[in-house]
Image (cartoon, rainbow, N blue to C red; front, side, top):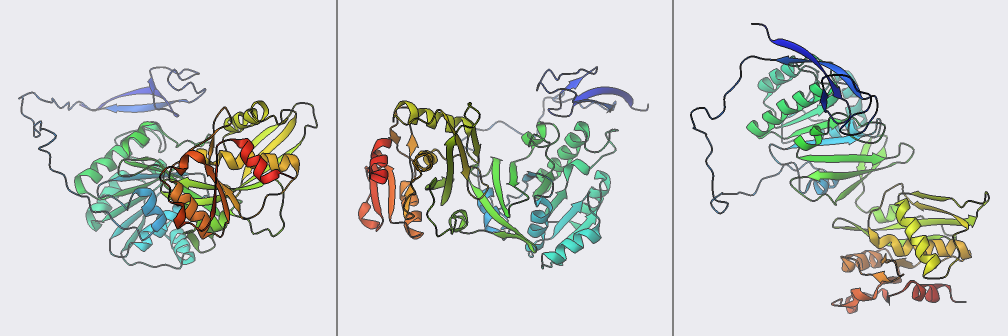
Length: 456
């Protein structure tokens, strides 16, 4: 008998199924996201457990044998750091980012750098000639990197069977389609089925699969949310096309930490790894300006110093404006309220604009102290000494709370030539100050920092 066909409506945002079209998705709350798709139901149903025999048996957790997984070195230190040490055999890694941010460039650089492994690079968006032109710009060549332009899953598995690659790269998952599903490529059903087939191949063959995914206008990965649940690692490639810096973050990682960050610089010949981001995130302006403070921040295990810029001015339209770039706006409002209530500074009637230099986003709470000092510097129009940096979290009673990895923060500041660093007083416990040449100021309240820096 031919397979039964039926249609259903799927939300293009979260993947929930509905028998009829609805305006608002009952699952994710988005409007006008339901699209009709054809579903194929096959008659060959598999009965599970009919004879009571299963290939796997329950084991005690103490009896399960484990072994240290050998990872593939991608020859890219920034990517290795974010992944947790390299590509794990049989893993699926999803890289998402805005159009033109450099996802395909990063994937091709990885494929060309893996000279000791056979890599199959499958592109559904570009022809082999276009990929060759990008490879020429990268000034890299690898005879073990095989390129094919294909969108059919059936043909892709045929190429895999013929080439037997060690690593598989798919650019992108939204362009693939399989004959099992009768909907257009990029639909929820196609993405879900193609990803499931690739996952089955990766786990059975122990071949790592690197997927590139599109994102929506909201910045989320396009396709159903199940796509992020299926894969082992989700990497977000961030940055502004008007800036040369690109940031690679892990939002999910089954084989490593999600707090690591990789920084790249986009050049005409590809992406260059930035091994010391502190020097790039600090301006080389010789003139001392008010509203600028340096924070000793951490991203995972990696310390770096960033420049916090603030501008405080009289509200021109009666209602003061609050604007923040690279820093949580709600946290900025909280810090301004602390200054108003606890420290006695009248900032409620002024416009406050905050910017994190370099176009990066910072989630480290230790940047709070630098934010407050930058705001005060701009408000009083008094510039700070260039050799001073800060690290500390601000509480609601204006106390400066301790932060983690204080040794690494101090060492990074000393390495870059800073002479003074203000850190929380509670971080002094167990800290050996004799090994540092930089002068360490222990402070417990915002008022202490203000008296030290702005006393006339």
